Amino acid sequence: MTEPSRTVLIAGASSAAGHACAAALQATGVRVIAVGSDAGRLADVPADASYVCDLSDPAAVLALAETVRTEVGPIDGLVHLVGGWKPGNDDATWAWLEERLITTLRNTTLAFRDDLVASPAGRLAVVSSTSVDSPTWSSANYATAKAAAEAWVGSVASGWAKAGTAAAVTFVVRALGTGENDTSVDTLATRVAGLWDAPVVELNGARIRLTTRSL
Image 1 (cartoon, rainbow, N blue to C red):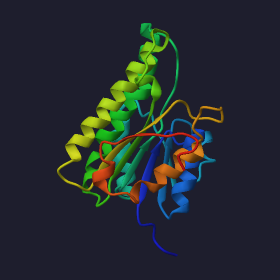
Image 2: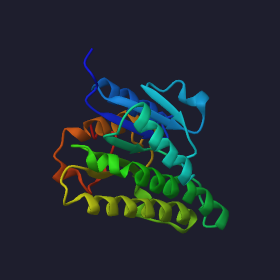
Image 3: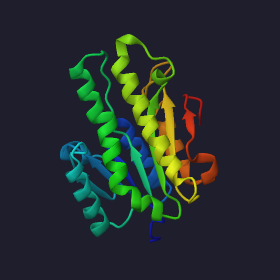
Image 4: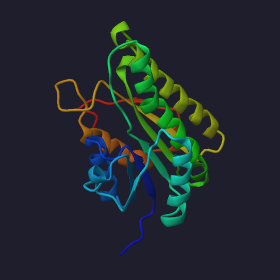
């Protein structure tokens, strides 16, 4: 059996998008590491290794990174799919969204950044929202959190620009789902799996809008 050429970690792998991305990546011969907060939900994800971790806890994520390097090896890709949506502009909603959309992204990218930089083809992919383009007061916290996450990814991309091997990409959707204006998880999965087919110079820092016809 041919050894997988790359290893990709999916954060938030137990979601529908996580399942789809894991299957698409495995189909291209990638070794998939699934990470989530619930062992039961992770059990059904098509992956070569699975880990339970509180991705909002910096120490836990650093420990996860060390465990992955020891048991599997360094990663070549990080797909951040930890999400959540709540309307509102109150403090409680902000705290809930910040932990999921920003803190988990910062923790995972900081913990695995050295792996992605050292890889000959490192990739970071996140999913953002069209609400960043058209924020409303009723969902001010969500749009702000997504904008902050995009800014973080842009900063990562800037840091990788000179090396020319790693790329940080933001996919933008209205929503992931099966609605008329939604982006299907299969469309997202296809684009994630294809990240290694495009030149780094075209990908790094890209903000790619996806629709159901993006295949």
